[in-house]
Each structure stands twice: as C-alpha cells, then as structure tokens.
Length: 329
Image (cartoon, rainbow, N blue to C red; front, side, top):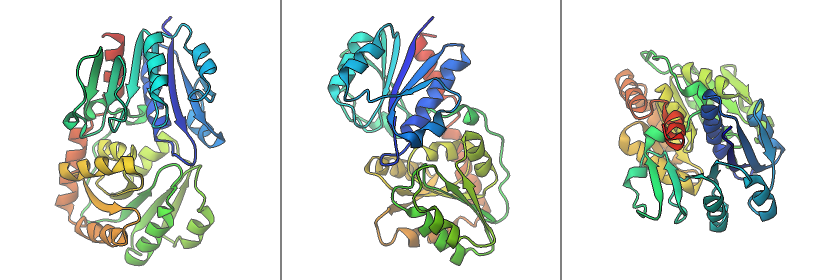
C-alpha cells in the first residue's frame, strides 16, 4: 500500500489556507483508495477543518527527530509551508520516493521533487530548470476541495440582491466588521451573508453590526461555503485560496489583499478580468473602492462576463491532476 504523508501548517496567526488545499489533495488520494495522513503544525483552531480525516498535530518543522520518524516508509511526501526551512525540504527530497512541494511565491530554490504552484500567474515565474525538478504550474493545478470539483451553472440576476463577505477562517486583519458596516449603510436593501470562521476574534462586534437582512454563517465547512457562494450574487473577499473557489462557482468578487503573499494573486485575478482589486487592507481608500466596484457590478452583463472568466480559468480538476501526475498516471 502506498504511504502518503502531507505536511502543512495552520493556526489563527497565519490562517488556514494551507490546510484547506492540503485537505483537497488528501481527498484526491482518498478518491483513488489511497490512504493519506495530514501532519499539521498548528493549534486547536485547525481541528474543525480536519474532521473525518486521518491527521496528527505535530511540530514537524522544528523537531527533526519527529520529522525523521514520520518519513519512514513514506513513498509520497507533500510539504505545504511558508515557514519550513530549506533543510526540511532537502530531508524530504532525500527520503521520499516522490517528494512534492506546494509553492505560491517561488519562496525557495527547491530540491529535487515535484513543485506545484496552482496560482493564476505561476507560469510567468522564472523557476530554475533542471536539478531533478518537475513543475506543475498554473490554475489547472489549483487544489480545490472535493465539494468544488463540480459546480452547477449559476443564473445571473438582473441586479445585486445578495452579497457574500468572506475573509478566511481567522480574519486576522479584522476586515469583516468594517465591510459589513459599509454594506449595511450602502446596501440596506441587499441580503448580506457573512462567513464567520473558527479563528475570528470580532464575533460580538459583527453581531452588533448586523441588520435585519444580515445572515451570519458560523464555521461553515466546504459544503456550507459552496452553498453560500451559490446563493450570492457577488462577494467581497480576501485575496487567498477562496478566490479560486469563487472562480470555480463563477461568483464575481471584489478582493482585498490582507497578506503579502496575496498581492500577486489578486493582481493576477484582476488582470484576468475576474475580480476588482480594492487594494491593500490598510489603504485608506480600500473600502471606498469596494463600494465603487459593487456599484459597477450592479450591471448584469458585467457580472455574467466575470463569472464566465472564473469558471473558464478554474475547472475543478486540479487536485486530481496533481494526484495523477504524482502517481505516474
């Protein structure tokens, strides 16, 4: 039996995007009857995302003895980290028959293995060639959870009636209450769906801000996120992994970058014509630009056009493509 280990990280301070996409790869192996195990360096806030999966919470980045014992007998090892040192990748590359490194920003000069970058702009990056590396680049390789492998066609209503607000599982920058306050004032006639993640600290503030047309959705799984997207006309979002799920659904969005590693992502999606980039979260004009973009997106044809672009660029097959390449299929 093939042994698959997926090493990643997630907690309130750094977010949960890595865990989300590693879960997608876990599910892809599971679909082929290949058991995998998630090894997560994190805290209790990440446990909800791992429900029903084989996992361990371990400090694998800093404890090399734990890492060494984990690697014994592993044919396929996946590393998805912004924090692991190069030595960790080198150890995995030497030990595993098939090492896989998930990247977003060309963070390291990776050792021998398969480098996966499913971001929209990955093919524009100047990755070094040779050295026993294979590259899977571009949005055809984006790792989406099973619930997003298939997506029904959405109708585009004549005007905006339902707005989704989603800033990840932790909203470390506290943007949700700011955006909700803006929309309560500017769009009182619209339904507002607000995603509340396990890592949120401003829940009471958000609850005080909501109006009679605000629905708070607490701790949704992938199914709940998909339903919320399908039941919305436009989204206001952070600039990470969620943008690829929105694209798969075909839900146009206005996005803000809330971390440095999101800037290229949101700019790439804006160039592609799927989103409006409202700017860096600290920019004093960002909320004003959210409002301007939402007013422009009242146009039915524009929303339909953007939704088509998103679905064309993200077809939901990325997790399976990465799995099949790794398995040599």
